[in-house]
Image 1 (cartoon, rainbow, N blue to C red):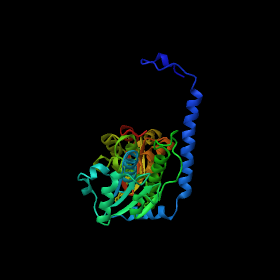
Image 2: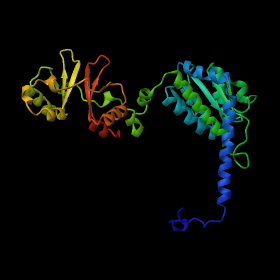
Image 3: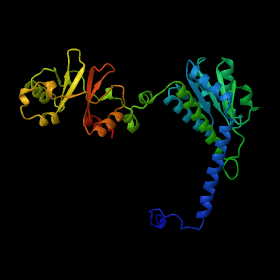
Image 4: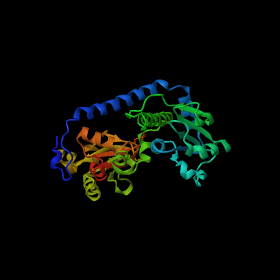
Amino acid sequence: MPNPSALPNAFPADSGHEGSILDAAKTVLATERAGLGALEASLNGEFVTAVQWILGVKGRVIVSGMGKSGHIGTKIAATLASTGTPAHFVHPAEASHGDLGMITPDDLCILISNSGESRELADIVAYTRRFAIGMIAITKVRESSLGKQADLILQLPDVPEACTIGMAPTTSTTCTLALGDALAIAAMNERDFDASSFGNYHPGGKLGSHLMDVAALMHAGPELPRVAPDASMGDVLVEMTAKGLGIALVVDDTDHLKGIITDGDLRRNLVGLMDHIALDIATKSPRTIQPSALASAAIGVMNEREITVLAVVDEAGILQGVLHMHDCLRAGIV
């Protein structure tokens, strides 16, 4: 454990309260865990209906809430958007000053208020009623003002906050966040939203690089070192040298891959090399990968086979490109 007095802005010395601090933290986690358990047990047909509405919305899912509920709502909207459900957060105060125009009759609103009495939501509630816009309430109190106006209620469990004075939003916000995740992932599963789809929404950063597909990184077209099955070894060497990928791809007249010649194949056949044709020394039925596969999966194949290059073919075995380990490394995929 670091010595607090050694830090530039020294913290107070240990007051002997470590036990009580840890006890408080564990109590918070236990309380919130119990809240999540109650939430799980309470899920019913209303949750199923909410997911079906999300899947059927023509426009976007609009999420709104005030204060801590707003912070959670922002995250829920972001999670929905990144998992295949167009969504955005509308701040209730800004909505009252023109941002109601962001909400259309084709949208679905999810409004969050633990008590169901957040006055700041009144204008959005009135707007949804005026224009017959579907509205789901996430609230603890079914008979609240918000609950009475909602088309559908996702009721939070009536469990205590983890705060020692019972007032700071803790268990309620944790449950709301988890409920939003449940909605997003349930909808995602129904859409058959896969890793490749997820990658389309996450092109940047470490996550984006790991979700890049092979087609985005492979060499294609004139960059490919192609030779015919009956090509002379002289022609093979010229093509390998010119394209600089360390291989030659043996393809027939219909671009079906028949084999791969690597530097290793050349070394193993040095004796009488120039007396052979391409297909004689090629590795036949080489390991390949499809363009839609994740580049990270391609690295797994290359590591497993202890190779540095993969031919990329479509389902019919027609050559599409070549993926080199160096291309993956340059893209930050390791």
